[in-house]
Each structure stands twice: as structure tokens, then as C-alpha cells.
Amino acid sequence: MGTLLRLATAGSVDDGKSTLVGRLLHDTRSVLTDQLAAVERVSRDRGLPAADLALLTDGLRAEREQGITIDVAYRYFATAARSFVLADCPGHVQYTRNTVTGSSTADVVVLLVDVRKGVLEQTRRHLAVAALLRVPHVVVAVNKIDLVGFSEDAFRRVDAEIRQVALDLGVGDVRAIPVSALDGDNIVERGARTPWYAGPSLLEVLESLPPSGDPGAESFRMPVQLVIRPQGAARDAAHRDYRGYAGQVASGVVRVGDEVVALPSGRRTTVTGIDLGTRELAEAFAPQSVTLRLADEIDISRGDVIAAADGAPEPVQDVSAVVCWLGDAPLRPGQRLLLKHGSRTVRALARTIDGVLDLDDLHSVPADALSLNDIGRVTLRLAAPVPVENYAASRRGGSFLLIDGHDGRTVAAGMVGATLRTGVVPAPTEPEGNEEWQI
View 1 (cartoon, one colour):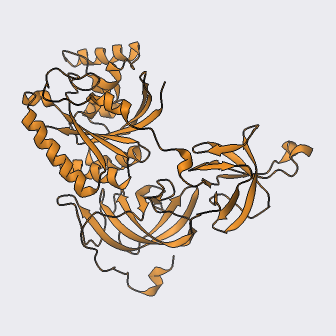
View 2: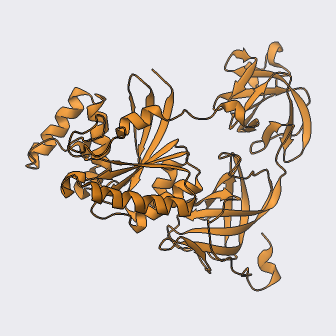
View 3: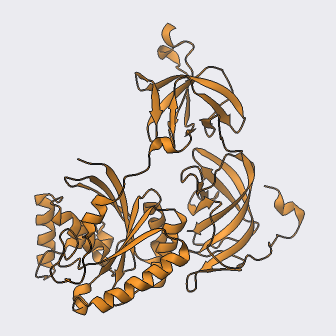
């Protein structure tokens, strides 16, 4: 079995995402016999002439009753060439937050577009999310080609529209494929009914995409989740002086003997041991969860970051970022929130809203608030320094969540230093009274 590829699906309601995913699972023989039998039984009960493969992913009862995808449905399948983790994301604008979740770790987004409708507002929104999240590849499945008589002109029209939007948003690698998810044309096998299309099928594209980057390509970072000091019966002679710092390696590689720095304190030390359970390792790399032992007893607690000494980020309290606003109530200047970066959570103040992306012309326009599903640029003031990085350099180090401190709900996903492609940045709008700037 080959390398792992993480993919996420996106698209507007009724573009056929669940059907495409079901077809992909069915035609790669990744569906268990009893699962397929259950889908066939439900399809017969509905009076359908054939199995509705969308039911393979629309697992929630509410989704089956409404015929839409609400939650992110994760599926795992494999071919002889490679293995896949698939996140089937919702299409309805109300659940854009789930699309952000599913796409945040994806190597490729498969975006569904109905060939009869072309690029819609939600299509632009999903392409904007893919661009901001720096998803390396976007594959556009121009679906329902059978409903336009397998017309080459219809496909070319949508393909040109998609490429223009992708260019405006700065999406690097985008390619379009004419497909019929219902009948299986160009999903796993190339379809004979599109002789004018000489490109690969969807599965062939997914199997040929380069794997995720080398874990050693980025500098070492590990947010500390737990400080381990054996207590009680575990505190025997062998472990009396044991002190370890546990967490998941977010990026890079760390080796015994490496010089590291604890952030935000800036204290430097050396790695003397790496433990994985009861095993000692010579090195650890992303995304392993390990415990580091250090040469010096320095003040490190949950939320701190252990990083390679060379090129470590400078902790900052003022952050400029692009956010996807996911809260039902709008974001306004002066609003207090919690910012979660890695395992650290600090209080934050929204100082200014510096623009919102207009999905019609893809320009940044002035705004005094961000509403549900808006994508905009904000400036935040943090209560304590946090070692954030530019999202262009590190997807993990440059990403954060904004949380409503009253009910604990996640209200935004943010990318530090990301930019809205074009447009006007308005003058900052400050809340009245200097006391509002106190966090």
C-alpha cells in the first residue's frame, strides 16, 4: 500500500458530493457487503430503481431525511497505489464551518460543481477557503455531465470560469474533470461517453498527486500538553528525578542532542532523551506524540512551545490575520474572545476589522463587522505573548481558533499573515474610550 493522501470534498448543495464519494467507495470496492445491502434496502424502500450511493456517506438520520450533508463524514479507503483519508464536507452555506474543519489538514480538495449551474457563491467561498488554508491541490469535479448530453462546450465553459476564479484567489494547482457521479463516468475508470476528454479519471489524479511534504522540511515545533512528574507508587528510585514534557510534534524533526528553546520564555537547553511510551528514541518527527527530556530544569508548562533554537518564532501580542467567521453573532471591534494556538489559550481583543472578502468580485471591501461565513482580515491584541508564525511558512504554527469565552464555542478559524488577494483596506475603526483596549 502506498503513501497516505488526505482529501476533502466541498461544493454547493445538490452538486452530488455524497453520490460522488459513494461512487468512489463503491467502485474501489471499499464498501462492506452488509453496508451495501443496507443501502440497497433503503433505496428500495424509497422506490428508487438502483442503490442510492449517497447513503454510504450521509450517515446521520437528519441527513438522510433532509437529503443534505450536515456533519463532516470521515471515510478510509485504499487502492493498490495508495491509502486515503476522506472528509466529506457539507455543502450548505450554514455548515461552512465544517468545510473549514475538513479542509484544514487536507492535501487536496475535491470541489463539486454542477455543470448546469456553473460557479456559484458557495463555490467561490470554498475556493477561497482552500486558498487561505493553502491546500496544495484542488481538483474540480464538473458533475452531472450526463444531464447536458456529455457536452464538451458546457464543460469548457465551466472549466474556464473555475480557472478564472482560482487565478483571482491565488489557488496554485487546480484541474477540472468532467464526471457523472451517478453513472460513474471518469470517477474510477475513464468514461467512453466523453471521448473529447483525454485526461485522467478522478481516482487516477488522486493516485498520482505527490505525497505530503517531508516532515523535516519545516523547523521543529512541539506544543507542550503535559508536564510528566511521576507521583506516588510510580515515583521509584529509577524515576525519582524524571521530568518530561509530553506533546505532539507539530512540525519538523527533533533528535537527542539538539538545542531547543522554550517559548515564550526564550530559555535555551538541550534534548537529552525522547520517550515514546516505554521506548527511548533517537529522534521524533511530526505527527508523533512523544515525551522530551531536557538538560536543564526550566519553567515549562502546558501551552508553551518547545522549538528548534535556530529560527524560532518571536512571541507577539499583536496579530494580523485572515479569519473565517463561524459564529452566529457577528464579530465587531472591541469584542473579547479566547485565542487557542496549539495547546495554549489566551484572552484576545478584536482591535480592528480591516476588510471582508466580497465573493462576487473577490475584492476586499470595508466592513464594520464580520457575519456568519464571512472571510475577513482582523487585528487582534493578545493578553500574553504567543509564538505564532506566518501561515505561508507553517500551516500548524500559523493557524489558530477564536473561541467565545462565555459558552466555549469555536467562532473562527484564523491564518496569521494571510492576505485577501485584492482590494481596499479601510482605516482602522477603534472602539470609544481607552479602557476598551484593556484585555
